[in-house]
Image (cartoon, rainbow, N blue to C red; front, side, top):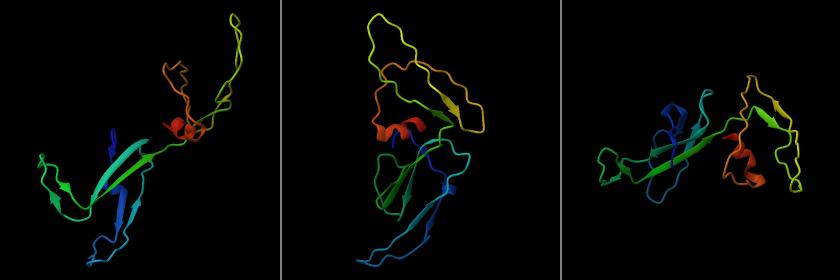
Length: 136
């Protein structure tokens, strides 16, 4: 995943740690992730090699494991700011001025510096993705 941080090995635990998988057999492993309280929001990823089997690679320092599990997570931190009216939709007339009042509430435990600015090229996000977008 591009621009991902590497998950620290201390974040996860795998059970069972070792097992023998017989021919034509399947098993389940448990991957438990414990995200530290001071983790910064963002994408994190890790590769878990299930066996030592590798294929040759042009980069010998980085083995390419055949039997691997890719783990990618997004650490989300709930927003401290609630915008009471997130969208303004209106019909306006050319040559007239309009004022809109938006209530913004800090529901967190710390002060939040607001620096409102117009973002050129921003696109409209579908409602289902708004929560994820505002968490970034």
